Length: 418
Image (tube, rainbow, N blue to C red; front, side, top):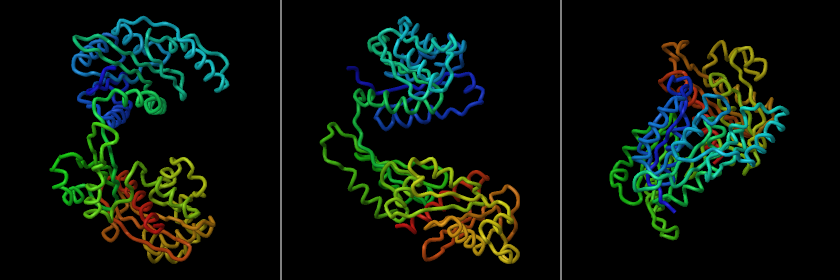
């Protein structure tokens, strides 16, 4: 069994080159390879052109043990990835009967009884390849092993382009394959923080980051939250766990901001806390416009605790559906402590839930004043016995202000629950 230490991600699609589609597949795969312990040194995007794809494959095979291709596995004439790669690998294409039957079953399940002829192209697979079933679409993937390139055999993985098909196929079929062949074994801990900026968190932990021993500490940031990854290199699975001492020191320095040590993101943490406490939640959103509801409903099983939400963008809706007193709107304004508290308690009462989150603010780019500039957001959490509110202010574009408001609202509820 050939060990794999380096990989190249090769994304195929003219629409990627033209910027018509954001290449999220490369980011997903690079992160997954890193977690497995396979170094991804290069990423390439190539259009739907056979000669340029062959050129990219030759370059990749010269410098990487593994090549992962995404896209170009569809039924149309410009979907040439499978045929071109098979030719590059010296393999012929043959009909894979289980894939043909899976395609027929997919169309039957979609109540489309007629399968067009070009769809059978997707069932043509390279000889000797490992076929990867697609449970979310029609295009199967493939792993082609032992492609001779110089003194070392190479491996090619072909995955469909749509993320809804690529990600489950990678997790179900490719990841277990690569874990057995990775030249490194890594033990990871993910420490997730909210309420502190990346630079402030890094400053508190800088000496631990600079040590770069085993285990190591590395920061990652996204809008509104920060994550640190603790990684230990191991030769065997039964080696002592050295991550816990480093985790303890991280807790000593930034523990007040940690909301999770593990894989769960904030919406999933909220779901689990509500389930554990047998509590229910509703939402009243103004400037976030349903963003909190969207984040929560991305989590499977949330329906057991999340009852619904009201997007009360207009003041009349705040009055009619959330019972916000008109005097509050006239005297304090929609973006105020009194208004957000009234929204939260009104939502809790009308939805008959244990908790309600309310958010109102000015996301911009216009609408701010000297007293309430763009980026001013009020958040409230109404519980069984009390209602708490706080104001946050964040600079940035509209999308950033709304996302940070969503995260801080969920964290405010989390702190209330714990």
